[in-house]
Structures are given as structure tokens and as C-alpha cells.
Length: 115
Image (cartoon, rainbow, N blue to C red):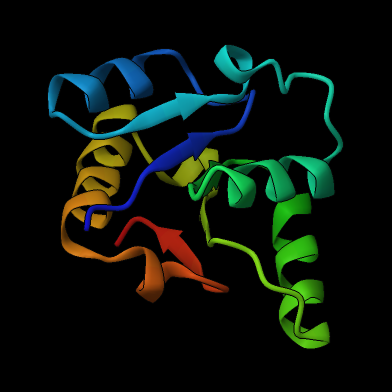
């Protein structure tokens, strides 16, 4: 089963567009009405939808590690430092994750980009 992605509000629009061209299941926080959710709420929203969250926001790293340490489940986080990746690189790496990983493999995991 492929991995469905949930994109944080700060992700450039070109990334979900590029992923959709590649037949990746992607939903943005804006499309879902999540623009005003806090980081923990956004991570919870992604989990409720069965989606792995992708973000450039380092605050999600803090929240994900806290959840790992406390044994609180989440559906996974893909993090990229925005100055270390290109839009095309993000699209390519997220496509690989979406098509090669499973939701079970991504659960409670933090994956860094670039791969």
C-alpha cells in the first residue's frame, strides 16, 4: 500500500503539483483547512487521515521526538531543511517514499530529506 502524504502550510505549491503529476496521493494543509492548526494538531490531523506529514518546520522534529520518547503514535514525519533541498529533489524523494515505503514502515518515524 502506498504512503499518502500531508503537506505542511509552508511547502511551496510546486511540490504538491509535481507529486500529483507523478500519481502520488497528496493533500495540503490548506486544502484540508488546517492552516491555523498548531504543530501538534497538524501532526494529529495527518495521523487521523492516515497520512505522513512533510514539513520544512523544525518544530515538527521536536514534537515527533517527544512523541517517540513518550510512546505516542503518529503516522510519520518527513523533514527537509529548506536550504538543503530543491523543489525537484523534494518531489523526487517524496515520490520514492510514497511508492516504495509502506504506512507501517513510516509510522512513528522521522525521515530526513534528501534521501
